[in-house]
Image (cartoon, rainbow, N blue to C red; front, side):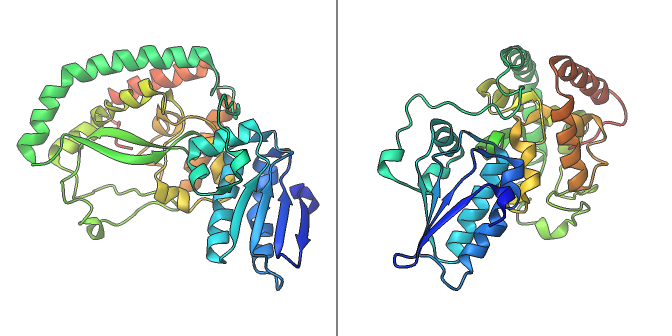
Length: 324
């Protein structure tokens, strides 16, 4: 095992059990090569029946660590190995519970106590009370605007095509936790069945199409003006999103992530962000989006958030605005 991964292995050939002691910090550096070494164990000639992940030393875990766990779960399932989590700290338990991994992994009964759990501070913005206050106030204002525009937008959507007014989709936010994102519907109701009509113009784990025939005429206007995103203020009020953050990916996108890509989930997703003010329609490379998200994390401050909000407002009212 590579020493840089900071793991210790103990194997009992008789019981075919391998125990992996996870590093005290299970983040980007430690997680990067974890799946590769986990696979080495899975394909070894003395492949174990069970692998125990011992988290007794782990005091911190972030999105990269979650990404490594997700890949390890898939590898264990692929090779018919039972994956057991043992001796989880308070913080690790909290993250497993929030991300839903608690229900997928085998946790020893005594390890499943989840009272008074503390989530990690993966980025200063996550626990900023001032940022949350701005989000709360902004979401109230945004929902007030939404309530005024809801009826005319709803009528326009219904007049052009039958179907629901709102569109919901599963996205993954902070640390990979899943939530439902809400938008005004901009596509025809048979959009999913017509996926073959659309060619993906983007590179990597994202989907982009400049001229999507499934988008309605009303939908084109809503996207151009960003009015379709007004219902997301409800997500901000619920705290699953922020006014400013990273682009919230779909589970299908997450499936294609390498460990370094998971770092973009160290902050909450936002209605706007670097990708929004830097030509969201023109950015068609997944790696470019990742870099924009990481740039936001490195530049983050409350003042920078306000700057991005003002830039977004200017962009919406400019003739060059376009859909995400």
